[in-house]
Image: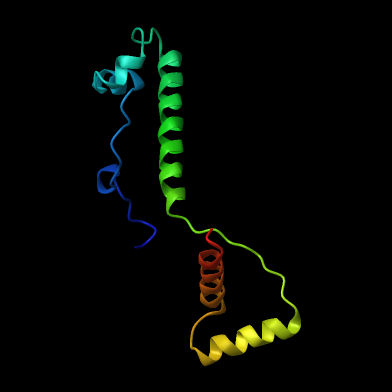
Amino acid sequence: MSGREHLSLEEFVTAPKKKLVVDVLDARSPEADAGLAEPPADRAEADTIIRQEARKALRRVKRERVKGESFFVNVSLDRRTKRRLKLASFNAETSMQSIIEAAVIKYLDDMGA
């Protein structure tokens, strides 16, 4: 495109405008409004309510995500044990982590924990 060509605004794709907070509150279901004593009187109050609802929803999403998450444990090994573990993982064609996980699970099962 040369420097003389000009683009018009109609050639650009634009996102639709955001709804007003009051419109969003009007569109909410009656079950969601059960916690509210009365509709918010002004826009600032409506914004506060929307922010609180968003925080609660974000907390719920984070809680659901953490349920399936794995956790890490650091283990201090001496040089000889680390070398044995590395050799075992090479010979078994598996990772050191999977060997340690299996060993911990077997230990816990044997202890009845």
